[in-house]
Image (cartoon, rainbow, N blue to C red; front, side, top):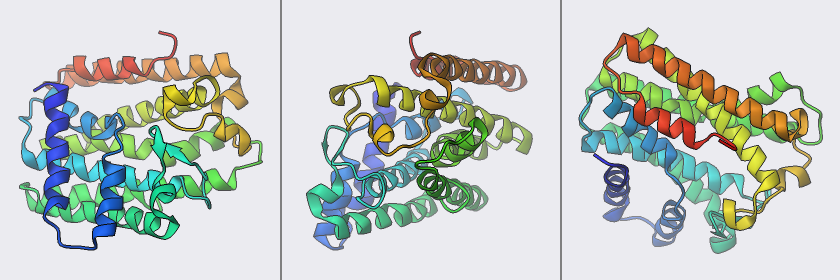
Length: 291
């Protein structure tokens, strides 16, 4: 199954969940506005790619889990863009949700996208234990022990000079855990033992770290047209970033070295289980800067 087919399954799962729901039309419009805003869909794609690398045939249930992850990510973007947070007018090249629908409805759309995913996973044709484990893992990656905590730490770090360890703690939670979840989820679905699940999760954490460093570099070097949002927002907000802390050149080296570590771990896992690391390595390499 190619990338387009995988992503089409995710889109279908999202459409099926919201398509026939009888709820406030304005809420549905706001939710779907952000869901349909585009983006790389890297998180759901990673989940399906890792499953396929583990020789698991992709089913609707897997696409539903991937779609649930994308809902959480999309909800976080709506809230991140609010005036009380990053205060951004554009996301993925068009008006942010609150600029289109107002702050109140944007907040509620984000709330819906944080809560709906668990119903979607519960409906999936997977074992009860797998669904419990997936719901627990997604909740921990998203809430007060994951993404939300990372956002709080990020806000509290504005205007401060953080060290590398503090910066990594912020982004391990704000960005890293939702990128690690696809790897952990694939391990749960495929029935790998706990140690291999942790090894997969660690690869996701490394990719999440590199993803954030790359995002920080692009915030400094890329244009609005290239990244689809206002550049240099972190600089204006006086946030600690990897280029600010390490320097631009060293931040690029740090990003690429982190990707090297992910590739080494992928090689290690491929020796332990029947795992086709090639497609995952391609994704890793796509994140490399100045490669």
